[in-house]
Image 1 (cartoon, each protein chain N blue to C red):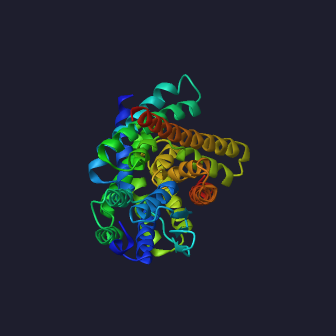
Image 2 (tube, rainbow over the protein chains, first blue to last red):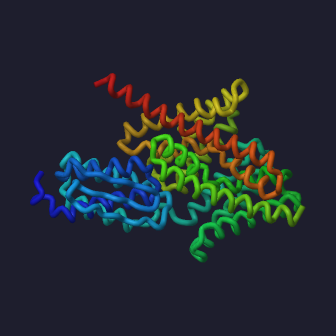
Image 3 (tube, each protein chain N blue to C red):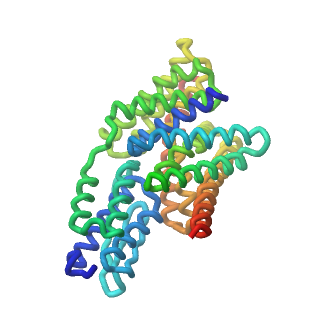
Length: 253
Length: 140
């Protein structure tokens, strides 16, 4: 496929950057973002493209003579459906099933799409997961019941607070303080026996376990900057949760 | 044991809703989470938890590779749900809480343990990926 068919160089760079941006914003691994972008560029007639991806910025160039373009990423969530869709678009493009114009249209649709599950469903899911985690961590059924409520409320509050205050740290701190307080109150009221088990189950939907693992994985793959910054992000979240719970427990006990 | 398997299945599938994986993969996510947790539970009494976590992650990784190949979707969709029960989130929280409470010795122990466990998970995922690549090369 030659350049005249697939648009100008600028448009192709733009297309690859858009794909990379969607993937990175929604929780794809660093190497996958880089891989997808260079593959798409290769399919559109630029086999020598390079991309450099960190959690906050994407840099992309199609050749040595071309000026590199960069894209800043400010918000990151986890929305694996979008990652899967971009992956699919890139696959179709590589196999010449769609043109670059069609790919651009589909990418724009994916970019604008809302979270596929409603907020209520997410809160219910968080509640169920929290309850189950209490049992996985060898808590009793009577601890799982309050954990169900506490984790649902905790997740709901973190979603709500994140809209209210822009700083993630405070949203997580307040939500975990709420979780600590509610767990304490439930045990005081005689529902559930071990505050610790209820808390551990309830904070699981907030805990950055996945981020920690991804950070180590990035470090091992040689993406040192990505690994360190993801590690820092995970550390901050864990710190917020620990502080929130510690704050409440030091007051009540 | 059965209760553990059911709860790990539900927990993994619910986490996939939080991570917004496509609707038709929820069942597979739950299955990979359940299998991983089952391996962990079987190995944990005999070996150290780092080793048990490592082997459980390899199983999750291999299962995710198979699912990813048959559904033509990125591996991460299935492995994310699968490793959720294994992830040392509870430990990371525990470490931070001890730090806040000035109990540094226990805090450091928990933090190191959490770091080692996430290392084990990452190694397991990478190993399963390498195994998958070797398998594909030997076939072609």
